[in-house]
Amino acid sequence: MHTSTLPPVAATGLSLRLDDLSDPRIALLLEEHLADMRATSPPESVHALNLDKLRRPEIRFWTAWDAQGALLGCGAIKRLQGDHAELKSMRTATAARGRGVGRAVLARLMDDARAQGVKRLSLETGSHAFFEPAHALYRSAGFELCGPFEGYAEDPHSVFMTREL
Image 1 (cartoon, rainbow, N blue to C red):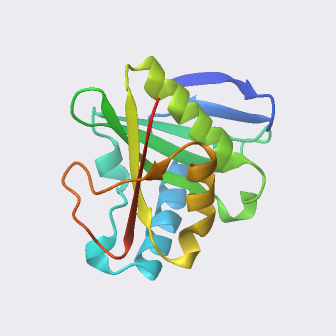
Image 2 (spheres, one colour):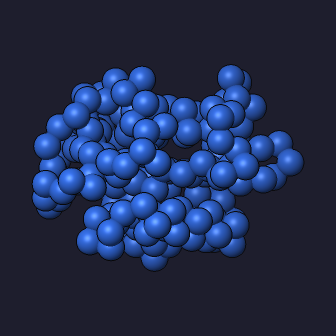
């Protein structure tokens, strides 16, 4: 059961939902995400959250679906201290890459963060070539490089980015 359904995003034809993570397809997409993170970064540099950690009250989890009911992507906002939040679990299904799913999810997360009173949004992602499409997406949305935040440490396998909302 989904807790909220918003109208489709006109530019992409997606339906973005504030989700309760109960659909088993979400678990599969997150397993794909975790497998890629483990394949591209050493274990101590994998900061992706599993399904149980995404169910915490400080996290709002969104999913992107097409008109046929296929899960195309996801992303989350984790509330940090004060008016600071972190992007987590940004993922586009492999078959849906290049179709604007990540951009639509990011736009919804940023809008949701603003609505929740967030003033600064930050993220950690990998530093390897595999992550370059994510870096480009975040830069195009106004994110800039920054140092580690909220318990992260300098790590050659991590890139930290932030932006004011």
